[in-house]
Image (cartoon, rainbow, N blue to C red; front, side, top):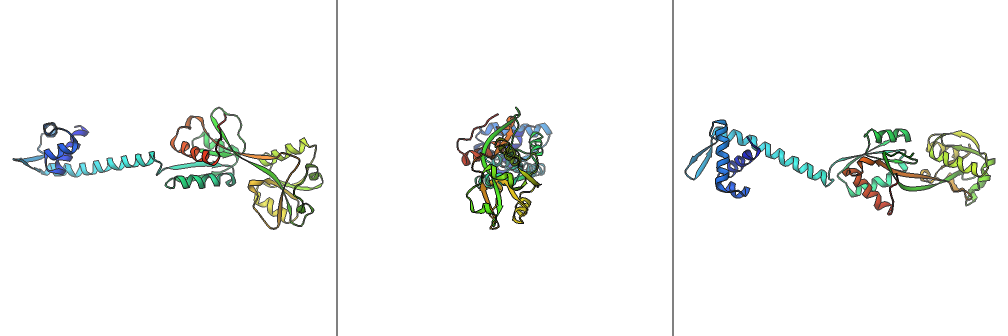
Amino acid sequence: MRHTQLRWFHAVARSGSFTAAARELGVSQPTITTQVKSLEDEFGMELFVRRGRRIELTETGGGLLDITRRLFADEKEAADYLNETRELRTGHLRVGAVGPYHVTDMLAAFNARYPGLYVSVTVGNSRQTVDDLLDYRTDVAVLAHVDPDPRLVAIPYRRHRVVVMCPADHAFARRRGVRARDMAAQRLIVREAGSTTRRAFDQAMREKGVEPQVVMEIGSRESIREAVAKGIGLGVVSEAEFIPDPRIRALPVTDAEIYTYAHVVHLSERQNARLVRAFLGVLKGLLPGARARR
């Protein structure tokens, strides 16, 4: 029994005519008649009772029609599903990120372009985020720092200045910026060792010959903000992480280039995967001219 025989049987049973079925399927009437007769002969039973030009389903034929209705309904559903997936009306994009600040504008743009897609975001540290990507638990990742790896493609997305936060009543609050050497006499609240912001700040201070007075390390940007507001010290964060607060001022370091970076990363072997390609297309619209580097 071939799939085409079932399709031709279904067309005849539905239309009640070999001629109408042949017209619908674009084949000759003798061809469809022969194929239906072959199906009957293969199983040794009649599917239709022929009464001159009229045909009627036998009991067996009626039972088979119920089956073919379900069969071809499922076939259409499968085709519709694949077409919708191909056109990105449905699907699940999995994003890994080291924090919500760099990824939210991308997700907003992606959702506007593909509102039917479901997006989930896993937030973790850099190592976890890379491992999830390599283990196929995520489709794309947003990272501040990417070590060279032939398995990965990293696309520079944004850079953000590192700023110094001070209480609104601090002497620095009246300035437009601070100098690196100003940090030497200040109590500083910084991110944990190894964080991208901390690495960038420490390197800039070393280059300027400044040894900062770190009094507190905090892994939470929100906690740094609250510590600064309470007057414990000056905070050091990425500008992308700074939320305007009347209690606090954010100042650039005017004599040092201190930046953190955001990269969109995906597996090299998956660059043509439909969801990955769609996400990169949205990214390109956000940052024209962004080029992948390996």
